[in-house]
Amino acid sequence: MNSAMSEINLVASCGINCGICLGHLREKNRCDGCRIKPAITFKSIDRCVIRNCLYLKETSSGFCYECEKYPCQRLKQLDKRYRTRYSVSVISNLNSIKSTGLKMFVESEIKKWTCINCGATLCVHREDCLRCGSTRNDK
Image (cartoon, rainbow, N blue to C red; front, side, top):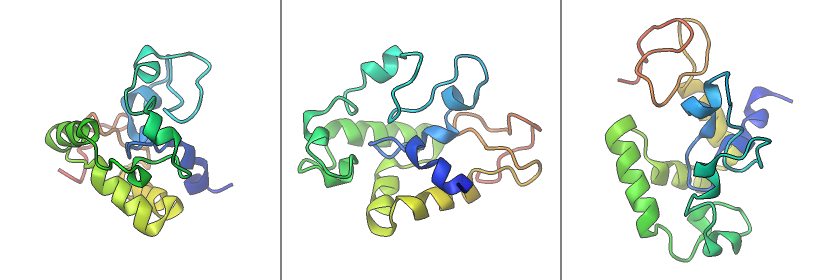
C-alpha cells in the first residue's frame, strides 16, 4: 500500500488531517486519529461534537460536506480557529475532498506537509519540523 492510501483514514470527518496533528506525530500516547477507534480512548475524541453528530451519521461518505446543514455553526467555528492559528481551512479541505476525492486530497497533503529538508511529516501545530528543526516552508 502506498503512503497516500495508508493516510486516508487519518482525515477526520470535519476535514482535519489528523496525520499532521501533534497528537498523532508524537511517540508517547500517540493518537490514531478521529476515524479510527483508538486503543487508548482520548476524551477529546469521545467528546467531539462533530464526530458524534447525528447528521454526520446519516451521510454515506462520513464527511461533513455531505450533511444537509453543511457548513454548520460548529464547523464554521472550527474552521475559523484553524485558519487563524494554523493557516488551514477545514472547510476548504472538505470542499477539496468533495471535488477531487479523498485519495487526491491526501496525496496533495503529503506533498504540502513533508519537510523539504529531511522528509519527515510536518506538524500543523508547530512552526518547525519536529525532526530536523527547519522552518516550515508554508509560512
